Amino acid sequence: MGVIARQSIKGALANYLGVAIGFFVSFFVLTRYLTQEEIGLTRVMVDAALLFSSLAQLGANASIVRFFPWFKSSTSNPPNHGMLGWSVLLPLAGFVLFAVAFLVFREPLLGIYAKNAPLVADYFYLMPMLTFFALYTTVFETYSSVLLRITVPKLVREVGIRLFNLAAYLLYGCGLISLDMFVWMFCGSYGLAMVLNLCYVASLGGFTLRVDRGFLDRRKVGEILRYTLFMTATVLAGNIPMFNSLFLGAKTGLALTGVYTIASYIANVVEVPYRSLGAISRPVIATAMKEDNLGEVNRLGRQVSLHQFMVSLAILYVIAINLDVLFELIPNGQNYRQGIVVVLVLGGAKALNSTLSVGTDILNYSRHYSWSLLLIGVLTLSALLFNDWFIGLFGINGAALATLCAYLLYFTLLYALLWRKLKVHVFGWGQLKMVAVMAALVGVYGLWTAYLDPLLGMGLIVGAVVRTLVLGGLLLAAVLAWKVSPTVNAMVETLPARLKKKGGGR
Image 1: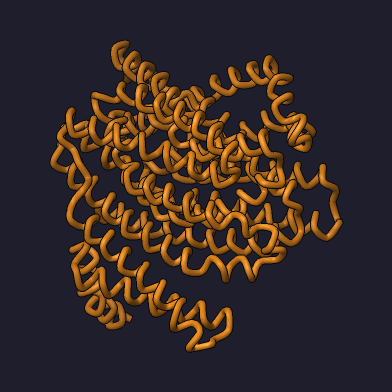
Image 2 (image 1 turned 120 degrees about the vertical axis):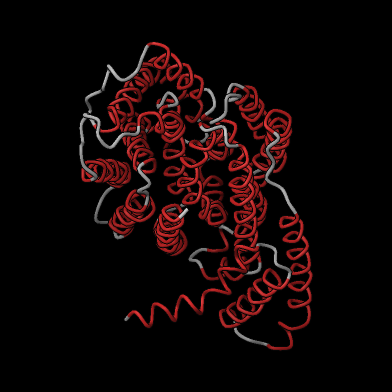
C-alpha cells in the first residue's frame, strides 16, 4: 500500500491545487467576463466531447486496467508486451466510428439545440476535434495509472487545462480575442493536455506502439475483445452527470445551463478525493480479483468506501455552511443564487457516487462483469427518464435530482448483486457513526446561525472563517473521539512521532 498511499496523496494534492485554481476561475473570472450563455456553451461542448470520447474508447480504458496484470513485464520487448499499442490503436478505431456517425447524424443533433441553444449549433463542427483530444488525454492518463504514476497526468488535467483556459477567459474578457478565437483556444487546451500526457508516457521509458502479437493466444485475444466491447456499453455510468447539461441546454437554453455549471463546479469538489484514490486503487483491485482474493477485495472495498464517505460528507458540510457567503462574494452572484439547491442535491449525489463507485470497479474486474450491462442499462435509462421528467417539473433543480435518484437506484441494485454473487460488501459501523456525527453537526449549524451569528455580529468573511474553523474542528474531534476510522486515528496518533523523525533527519 506504500506506492498507493504516496501516489494517492500526490494525486490528491494535484487535484486540490486544480480545485483551488478552478475555484478562482469559476467564481471570479467566468462570472465576471462571460455571460451565462457563454458559460453554458463551454459546459455543453465539454460534456458532449467527454460523452462521445468515452464511447469512442470502445472500453479500452477498462481493459487497460483489467488486463495489465497479464501484460505486465519488466523484460519483454516491446515493454509490457505492447500494452501501450493496444491502448492507442483500439480507441483510434472507435474514433473513426464516431467520426462517421457524427457526419451521418450531424443535422439531427444540430436540430436539438438550434432553437434554445443556437451558440451550440454555431460551434458544433469543433466536436470531432475536441472529442479526439479528450479521448487520448484519458487513454494516456489511464496507461500512466496502471504504471502507478498518476501525479503528472493529474496535474495536466486538473491544473494545466485550467490555466490554459484561464488565459483564454482573460483574453476574451478583455476584448483581445473574438468569441471564435476563444472557443478555439478553449478546445485547444485539451489538445495541449493530450500532448503533455503523451510526452509523460514516453518519458517513462520504452515508448513504442508495437504490439507483441506472439504473446497472446487466440483465446486470450477473444477474451480481451469481448470484455473491451462489452465495456463500451457500460461507460455511460461515469457520464450520467453530463446528461444534465445536455438536457438543460436543449430544453431550457444556455443561460440556465450556465447557472447549473457554476453550481456543479461547487458540487464537484465533493468527489475530488476519489479521482486520485479511485485511479490508484483500481489496479490493486484488478490484481486481487485476478488472484481470486476476495478477502483482500472486501478489505480494500471497505477501506476505500469508508474514507471516501468520511471525506465526501465533510467537504459537503463545509460547502453547505458557506453557500450564502460564496454567492455573496462572486461577481454577479445574484444571477447564480438559484443554483444553491443544485449544489446541495448534486453534492449529495457526488458523495454517494464517490463512496460506492468502488463496487462498480469490483464488479467490472470480476468474472461476473457481464451483469454490468444490465445495471448500466438501468442507470442510463433512469437518468434519461428522470432528466426529461424532473427538468420539466423543477428546472435546474430537477437535473440535480435526476442524478441523485438514478444513482440511488443503480447502487441499490449493484450492491445487492455483489453480495449475492461474491459476498462482497463495503458497509460497516463506520458509515453509521459518520451519519450520526453529520446529523448532530447539522443541528449545531442551525443553532449557530439562529443564536451565535446575531450575537457575535462578525463581518461576512470573518464570520464564515470562524464558523468553518469551529464547526470543522468539532467534526474532526467527533470523528477521532468516536473512532469512526481506526486508520485515521492511527495516523493522527503517529503524526507527532513522524514529524519529530523528519525534524531530526534534517
